[in-house]
Length: 338
Image 1 (cartoon, one colour):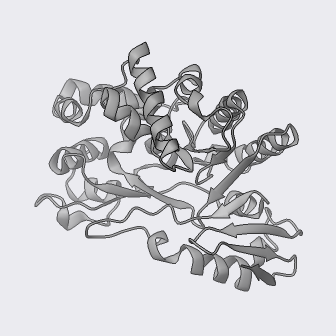
Image 2 (cartoon, helix red, strand yellow):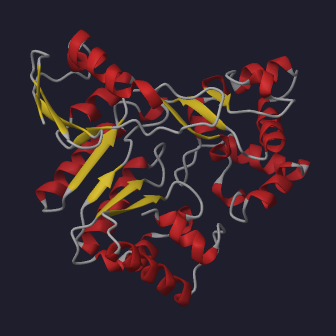
């Protein structure tokens, strides 16, 4: 069950503090869903409206999970600066509730975080598991991600919903405020603009007459074609598309990805967004073949790379029933168990 959907059904998409009555309504809906057969709760606290939860608020609304073997799967609060603190936050939440934790699509966004944060997060997971908490994770085999283009806008400007955001984007004074924030590092949300750069952010799913011809081009390229500042180009795209378009963002390093994939707790996923038309991330159709070809057959888990470690590991390929467990040998050979 989607935690954001439940919150929105009770209190809308705003980031206002919840009343005690609203929190109780959320807990009741969670209980109803669990009783109806839900096997877990999925959280996206990197996005509104769940971003509005603080740690104590998460524990309060997830209280119905206590005593059940029901996992919490989470897109952590930030996957850029401070992502290790975001992992620690969810470990504390799930330890307080005594429930399993699953960390979704692990990554480290931004060059200054490469080869540092990944190691910290893997140590956090190992320590939590040694302390008795069931913690697992997943990753997709790319260093380019995909989400809605509006995710580039700082959460506080999204807190009143899409229509209010569109009004902000049409206001030059608010544009200047957003630009000032996007130019600075943030440990509170993942500032992909500052971490990856407009040269690594591609607009997809654009349908307006103004921007459909630019689909598949980076924000920097589009800005150049329009003789425009790239920040204004971003805002213009969101306005013309009414925030209903997506992006591809190249953010990471191969060695971090390999270390996540090699971890014994890690499952392979696609994390795919299925568009109605236009371009899409190749992980929609290529995650599993890419993994088996690139990381098993051709270059077994980065042999010869700085991040490569000569050891075997299990990787659960979650593709429906039956589950496939792939035991990767140090030699690169693979044994599959169904």
